[in-house]
Length: 54
Image (cartoon, rainbow, N blue to C red):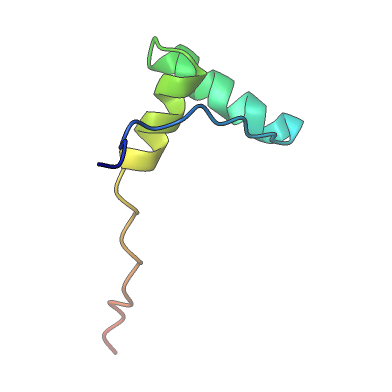
């Protein structure tokens, strides 16, 4: 039987990425891990469509 428990991972990010994660965590009243989970779960925005009718 295989253990499906996720392991602990460390990811290094640039300072500006950390700033975004910190602001997201603060606005969501969570920590960096909660911000990462939130950003991963957020659906990607739909592409803008051209509605130009001439």
